[in-house]
Image (cartoon, rainbow, N blue to C red; front, side, top):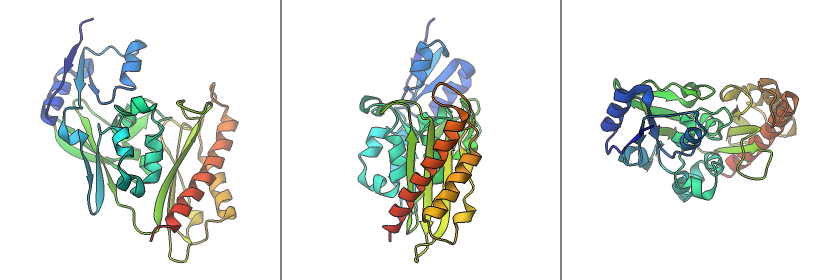
Length: 287
C-alpha cells in the first residue's frame, strides 16, 4: 500500500488535508498509539498528517488566568516546566505515566486524549481540573469540556477535518490542588486497571469547599464521581471512606485479564481515597 506523509505548517493546511482525504487520513501528533495500531493492521491510513510543524499545536502559555497547552506539545517538555508542575502536579503525574522517557519526547496530552482509550491517564486528570478542548475544523472553532470530548471507547467528538488544537485550564484558586494515581499490573509502562484524578479546594478553616473525582479504566469513558457529601466538613478518614464508597459504586468496569469487576471496584475506592488525601494535603499548603 502506498502511503503519503504530509507535514503542514499551518492549522488551515492541516484541516484542508484531513477534510480532503476523510477517513483515509490520520493526524499524527506523537504517533505513540497510531503507529502501534498501524503495525497491528488495525488502521491503514493512506495519508499521515504530521501536526508537529504547527506552531499553535506546539505552544505552551501560562497566562494570568489560564494555562493553554498545545495539543501536540510533548509531555517531556511539559514535565520540565517547573511552573506548570507547581500549578497542576496531578496532571503532570498523569503525563509522566504516558510510556517511557523516549516515548515522552513525542507523546502529547492531546494525542493521548484523542486516542479515546477508557484507560488513558490523561482523561481523569484533565477532567478534574475542568480542562476545555479547543477544536478547529472546516466550520471554524469550538470548545468542549474534556468530559464531553470523550464519547466512548476509541471515540471522540471530533468531526471530519477537525483537530484538537489546545487544552485550556483555569489557574487553580488559593487552597486548591489536584492529584492523580493509577494502579497497573506491573511496575511500569502498562495500561491502568484503574486511574483516579482528584481535585480539592479548601476553606480557610480547612473544611472542604469543593471536591472532584474522576475515574478511568472502569467505564466506557471517564466517569465523574459525585462528592457533595464532602462539602462543608473536614477531609478526614470518615469523609475519605465515604468518597471511596461513592467511587466503588460509580465504577462500571468489565472483567478482563487485568482484573475482575469486583477487584476493579475495590481498587477504585482505594485510589479515590488516596488521591483525594494527596490533593487535600497539597491544597492545604497553597495560600
